[in-house]
Length: 308
Image (cartoon, rainbow, N blue to C red):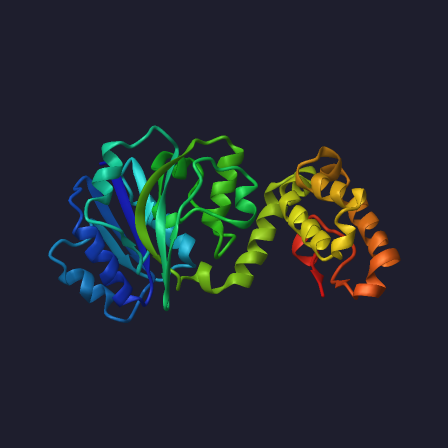
């Protein structure tokens, strides 16, 4: 068996029907389909029973969350690869699996592109060919467009149930740190609906991400990861200065140093302190620039913002 498609659902019958249609119209046949329902009372069980081609395995019973459901689906999977296509999401075209598996690369994780859709909006999401740890500081890849070796998932004991929203994102970080091979295929794989828990509970997701960094990363790595956030903040600060100051050597040097310099990465606090001193002594009173936090904290770079 080449592929296990695992669909989790809970009280989303219309979304499940959309996902079902996209799977069953595929001209690729070497797959199994597993559906894990969290005990819905909206007719989900009756719908699955009515299908001409029912899932190879399905159950409808309570679980403790989306990642518990995914792990349950994984425990029944037999395919070499796993794809988690949740209820409501759909495969993009009828031949998309055939096109992918006709040239499937040797890798641990193969990630594709996606279309994101929500109420009144739709946009394409294209990912870089190379993923690094700093990419995941603010971004992620689309879980529903990513194919993962089942062996890797089982060796990792599935997804952590300590997190309710970002365990797939946590897995990407763990596997990047372990040196697992990610390969990008420039194929639009799925339509991802922007009504899931990860898209609607943004603050909770942000807090969970911070906990993941606390869990996984050594202290000395965190300032390096957040360097790009610092760079953007410092450049924003410089742009707030009056045009006459932009010609000054100190300001030009600050812009250059902020982009990619070992000294700045190692001495961010010092640079911010110097910038704050310059601002207070020469600029604040005249132009009324204020900012929310003078102390740059690499663990919480979002607190470092300048405002008029």
